[in-house]
Structures are given as structure tokens and as C-alpha cells.
Amino acid sequence: MLTRLVPHPLLSLTLVLVWLGLVNTFTLGNLILGTLFGLIIPMVTAAYWPNRPKLARPFKIIEYVLVVLWDIIVANVQVAMIILFRREPDIRSHWIPIPLDLKSAEAITVLAGTITMTPGTVSAMLAADGGAILVHCLHTDDPDSVRDEIKSRYERRLKEIFP
Amino acid sequence: MDFAAELLISVFLVISGIFGFVGSYGLVKLKNTLQRLHAPTKATTLGVGGVLLASIIFFYVDTGHVSVHELLISLFLFLTAPITANFIAKAYLARNTRQDELPPSDRDFGWSIYDDPPDGEADR
Image (spheres, each protein chain N blue to C red):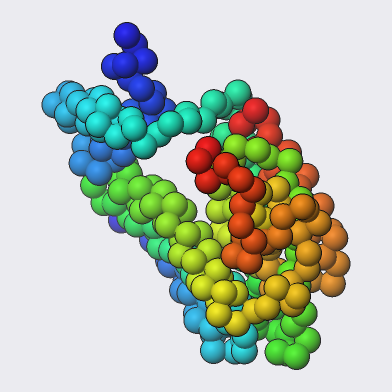
């Protein structure tokens, strides 16, 4: 019964929070309206969400977001230095294939988004069976270290969040 | 508005201006489409992020309310920007790159724009 009423609890929670953020004022009326959206939209669209991602340790998300934000700031400065002070022929771009241990589509999507949002690396493509991701790196002298850093910093944490 | 708040807001605005400029300069300087793809990621992260932080502080000092619109803007940016970059990269690869120019995937299946997924994979 509860799963029929709330087929996708995470989506419902997200919708309520986004609605409250959009109206930008917290009142009881808005909370009720947001809750209505959070109940109705997942019910109507339940057919499009066949697999619900299971989160093993939701609080690890906070740690992950902080790590990614910090990396974005550091990488921004590094890439700005490359663009400003490195002569164009000296910029050595590399394609880096990264084998993936993550299995769920949601986890791979988050990883690909993270790689793209941290400046200096863009995720371009997955292998046809989803077992590897192709990353374009703007400049590096050591492609292996980029691969190892992505695996140890992001993928390891995502594996804990998405079992 | 007191001096400290004004200083903080100005610092964030200058930071975002610098990174927005470097991102645009990178678009001009870099010669290759895939290298250019790296420049806008800076404009959308620290460039926009600085303006949003400045905006949060300004409206907090000005009205006393914390505005969450800025957080939503960054949420939507983080959802949409990687998808755009991924589409551009894929379209570029499909038009300009042969399979043998890319490193192998080291899997039984090659990269997805050249190889079909395993049987039944599309139905999962």
C-alpha cells in the first residue's frame, strides 16, 4: 500500500524540496502544495521509473558533494593556469579509458556528470556494455594518475553510496 | 550595508568575472573542439558559482532572508551542463573520429557509438 502511494520516495522528497525552493518562502500552504506534487508526479510517472536506485549510505552523499565542490575549485585554478600560461602546442590532451566497477545506471550517470563538471576532464562515452568510460583530459603528463585519481576519489565513494 | 558584506560580495563577483573571462579566452585560444569543450565547464562552475554566492549574500544582507533560488540554479546547472557537454563530445566523435583513433575500451565491447550493446541490454 505504501509503495503504491509513494512509489519513489526519493523523487517525492526531491520534488517537495524543489517546489519549496522555487516559491522561496516556507509556508504551510506551499508545503501542502509541494507534498501534493511530490505524491502525484511520481504516481503518474511511475511507469518510467522501473528501477529505483537503492542508497546504502545516504549521508555519504554530503561527503561526496563536499569533495566534488573542493575538487571543482582546485581544478578550476589548475585549468585556468593551463589556458592562460601554457602555449597552445604544449597542451597535451589525452583520451583516458577508465574501467568501471559501478554497475547501476544512476551511479555511472553521477560519475560521468562529476567528471564533466570538474574542469580539465570531460566524460565522452561509455563502452557498449557500460563497463568502461572514455574521458578526455585537457592536459596531463601522466594519464594513469588521472585514471587512478578518478577511481579512488569518486568511484570508491559512489560505490559506498550506490551498492 | 556594511563594508565587510560589500567586500565579500565584490570578491565573489571579481572571482566569477575572472573565471568567466578565462573560460571565454580558452574558447578562442584552444584549437581543437574537444579542448574547447573544457572551457565552458569553468564558466558554469566557478563563474556562475561566484555570482550565485554573491547574490545569496547580497539578498541576505539586504532583506534578511536566505534565498534558495541560487541553490536551485546551481542544482539545475549541475544536472544539465554535463549532458550538453556529453552530447557535443559524442556528436563530434561520431562525425570526426574513427574508432582506431581512440584507445581501446579493454572490454569485450567497444565504445558505444561504434559498437552495439550486448543482446538484451537495451531492454533492461
